[in-house]
Length: 217
Ligand SMILES: Nc1nc2c(ncn2[C@@H]2O[C@H](COP(=O)(O)OP(=O)(O)O)[C@@H](O)[C@H]2O)c(=O)[nH]1
Ligand SMILES: [Mg+2]
Image (cartoon, rainbow, N blue to C red; front, side, top):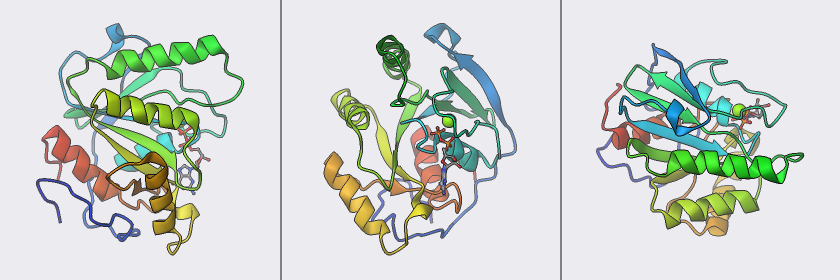
């Protein structure tokens, strides 16, 4: 059941239990940018996805959009070096931010990543929500925590997603979510998500629709 204001009581309860299906008929990569001059200028609402390389970002975007390979998934981390904008029903954009935290990346590359992502996240009024992806199995790393604090400091609207929830047992799920919440010190519990089972795909769509002020059902 959708409500105007999303307030999860226990997102771990709905394991694989879809209440509704958002069906996407029209989606494609619309812009690939390395600097603000390449960002869309049409003012459509945007939601952004960010996380460590290999956290499951491309898989989540594909699952949300009901596509197999729109956003590329790869075992080779560190491939996406651009900010990718996916048009969704020509009503909003999914923004795929480059991953961070892989080895073999020089300090100057990391600085470039920071400048590019910061250049997008700051001064972007059409950005309605950021999803920070963390692997449900692991403790958040230094980069994850830094981003988390940065979002809070600048008062950016964000939600933490605990990815790959199918990798742990249903019985262990609440424990992992609670541990992640404790480490982050966040008020709202992270939302478990699986691109394998689509767990909480509807929850994420509810957040997106509410924040963007659009109804896709
Ligand atoms: N079991 C499981 N594997 C996942 C899930 N999401 C991603 N993966 C796997 O994790 C690896 C990295 O995923 P990818 O989406 O490319 O991560 P990205 O680097 O953050 O874009 C791939 O082998 C995916 O198949 C998930 O929800 N469940
Ligand atoms: Mg990816």
